[in-house]
Amino acid sequence: MFSSDTFEIEHDGAGFNHLEKTRCLIQWPEVPDCLRVCYEGKDLSGNCCRCQKCIGSMLYFRIFGLKNMACFPDDITNCKILLLRYKDIAQIKSMSRILAIGREMKLKASWLTAVRVSVWMNLILGFPKRQIRPPIRKLERLVKRWIRG
Image 1 (cartoon, rainbow, N blue to C red):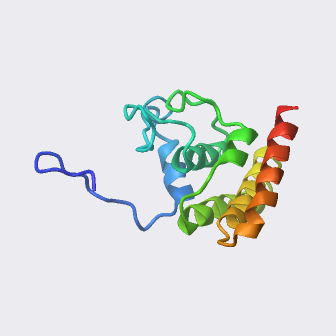
Image 2 (image 1 turned 90 degrees about the horizontal axis):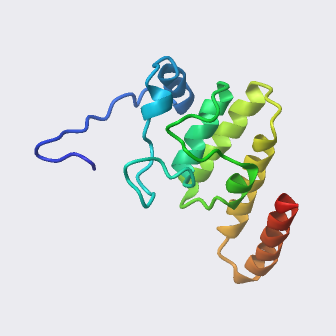
């Protein structure tokens, strides 16, 4: 996908899950400053800190206790998690895996609740019937107001 005639990208590590890959990455001292996971933001030279890929990666690092990494200039908030819209079921499954890992590791963090609500809201929003959308939009506005105080 990102390869060209002069630059080849080699896919590697398919035998490992995201948690195992993150565990390996945190061993490298360069990662907090240089890691780039995003290809959706306006500025492609860095991470947007808003898309599912950025937020998911930030959450995996949080599982290992890493916060406020320089490669992610904007810190993640519960509000950002709640407002995240997933493009497909694969992204919902990816965030659901983060929830499962959090449960397995017995983590107690408000961001886990935000991920749970985000997954459920996206499942409902993805529902094709029109009559379910207006109440969800109202719920979405209420959640935004509640978060902002």
